[in-house]
Image (cartoon, rainbow, N blue to C red; front, side):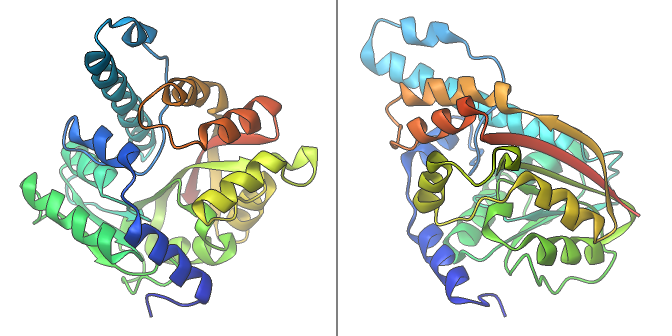
Length: 278
């Protein structure tokens, strides 16, 4: 069953209705559409462009470069992927990372989302890129995908773990991964060293209809499901510049202040976690 709770229905309805320019205008730059943020050093010279329209386009292009850099960072951590392997994009959004994975590795990629709008958009993009025979998106629940056990060499969540119970998610990922397979996530989590989530994290939760997890829950749930972390990187300093630039852009949504406050306070972190299935 794709929708298994009232909350999941709310999430599906949110993403079915979502038409945010920050996701669409950035994707228009190259035809690769994401639903995640960016990392890396910003080229601040884009703000010096004299003409207003040209400056706006330069900022949009730079934001898109940063979100592509984030996706490439995730893909580089998937391990040794060969063309005969199969990958799973859990919470695949508009499909950009899956299309990039196929371009990088030449392998089959499946994406799953509980949003019919996202699935339809992503399949249309796969067709436009000429990779619909290798990249396919499905209306399925990432907690109960229906795919066969051990079918995937690597699985990733790119900013989608905050919509699910981690124990349920990692149990399904552990079932789907081949022995020795790789799991990667890039995610925001609240720093439980500081106690409960700060007000800014609560604002982010309300904005995206999500429930950001404490950092410790990732490692506890992984350990319970045969996923052994091999790399953990705090990307917080690398994502703050993205948010500072987005705050000055025409596609700012108003949530930028909450992200910057949460990151700068130390109560919120942007992590890359890489784990192997044993």
